[in-house]
Every structure is written in structure tokens, then in C-alpha cells.
Length: 417
Image 1 (cartoon, helix red, strand yellow):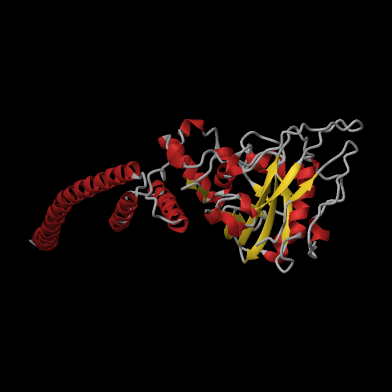
Image 2 (tube, rainbow, N blue to C red; image 1 turned 180 degrees about the vertical axis):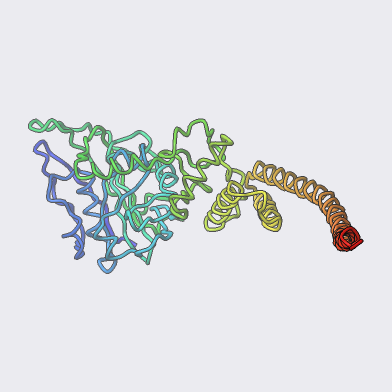
């Protein structure tokens, strides 16, 4: 818990700030990594005051929100060096706790060192806007305490959480044309009793500060290509999905795209497109993201198995697929069209098998009849051959007898008188 008394940071026309008063000021070793040497916004300077009073044993960093963080992609990149040193190397779940003690669960994508699923819900719940500054304090592994410094004077924060707003008008910077603002760091006593342990809350009493986005423009471009469509797939009309680039698989407000390979994600998009619907939109709320991802992967695998089926494919495979899809339906997955196609294929395969078996029986019977007739003919042919040989022998005997009679006749003719 922060041990801070009331601060007030005032900015004069020259843009320089007066040093805040505090009992003690701490500076952790990671400031050299994350503090910017460029001109800082008043919100960022106040965020650094907050960081200076955090417990130095736990690392922290401050981050100015840009457009892509709160209005376009809802994709929050974290400092790479901080992530490499303090966060897991694999995708995981992180917890964010705001000043009111409210806790949010988000997906952390290690490869991109960014927060994705759940970040939009966090932004909406805390009314985060472009130009706000967040102080992330890693109080436990994968658990941050987040302090919010409002940076654009939005009316959404005025009076909210019981924060008094200053009526003193902003002064104008003669040289830079920027508006100065009064930022107050209020003690915890201004909050409700059940939130006193969270330490402090920050009020922004002015408008119109132009936030420099140059340091985050690369993150802006990257996150715009990773658009999350809505908080929940069940509330989205699939007609709003223009293509795979802005297709996101959401479960209870959390993006689970990272649980799927790119191949499965594309194939699942094609299935959803064919039905013009998010197939997972009716999944039970009690299902965790791991099980939901397995259901989606299983659905894609079965659809590919159906596509590659042949008439000779095993009926046992069809049975296993149908039972699996039936189980997915019990969880709320829209796989009825796959079961219909599978049942159609099973019916056609069965009809084909029955027809083939019937025709095969007839052909085999005819084949047996022909074989029998051929055997009979072979026997008859053997008999005829025997008869032919006998007749040949008889002809030879007759020839010999004729020659004998011819010889006897000639002897009689030539006998002496």
C-alpha cells in the first residue's frame, strides 16, 4: 500500500513543474530502462511520482495509452525488456488489480509481449482513454497492481469515484501552445472505506493535453492488424466480420486465438463463414478457454476428416466423429450442420454398401452357374475327344483292311492262267 500524503503538481506557463512534496521518494533500478528522456506529459510526470513511492522491491513501469490501446485494436504492448526480465516466456494468464481492488484476468502473449484477451474489458470497466497513463506494479508473479492517471480531462472521470474536480482554469503555454493542467494525487481517505487499502486515486482536472504518440506508433500499427471485434462472440453479427484479418475467437470476453494454430484458426473461420455465424457463440459460460480451444480444434479436425472421406472409409470413423460432435453439441457448439453432413455420408455409404452386396451376390451366383456349366462342358469335351480318338482308330483300321483287300484283288488278277 502506498504511504502517500496529498500531492498537487502545478504547471506554469513555461511547462515546468514544481517538485511535489512527500516524506520520502524512492527510485527503483528499472527507471533507467523505462523512463523517457523526452519531454513528458503532466500525466506521465505524475505517474513517475507514483512509481517513485512504490515499493522498490517490486518492479514497475509506466505506459501512456495510445489509440490502438483503447479504440482500435485493444492490444496492449508492454516494454519488452520488462517482459523478458519479469514475465513468463510462454503465453499465460495475468491478473490486473485497479485502485478499487477490482481484479481482471487477461491473456498475455509472450511472443508479442502484449496483453490481448480481456484488455478491452479492462479498458471499458476503467473508462480508459487515449492519453491516460497506467502505472503497472508487479506485486506478485503475473499479478499487477495498476494505478491510473487520467491524461485527457474526459468528463467520464470528473466526479467519478468521488474525486473532486478543480474549477481552476488551465493556463496556456505561450511558447508551445500546450495547455497546462492541475493534477491532484489524493490520499486514500477520499475513497470508500472498503477501498482504503488500495492507497490512492488520481484525478485529472483539465482538458486537451495532446499526447505524443511517436514512441508507440509502431505498436499502434501492429495492433491495428490484430482487431478484436466485440467483447463476446455471442453478441456479434457475423456479417460484421469482413475477413480473417478481423476475425477473433472470443470466449466470455477473452481472445483464445493464441490457443489455436494458424491453420486451425483459418479453417475455423471458413467453417464460421459457411454458416455465417460464430460456431462457439453458445458455449457454456462455465467452459474454460483451454476446453473451448480443444472443442474448436476437434471440430476443425472432424470437418477436414469429412472432406477427405472416401466411399471406402471406415464406418467406425464416422461413428466416432458423430459421437464426438454430439458431445460438442452438449457443450453448446454449433456443429449440427457437420452432423447432418456426416449422417448423409453414412447413409450414402450404407446404401452403396448394401447395393454392392446385393449385386455382388447376384454376380457371384451367376459366376457359379457359369463355372458349373463350364465344368460340364469340359467333361463333355473330354468325352467327345475320347470319341474322336476312337473314331480315328476305326478309320485307320478300315484303311488297313481296304489295302489288304486291294492287295488280294491284285494277286487274283495277276495269277497265272
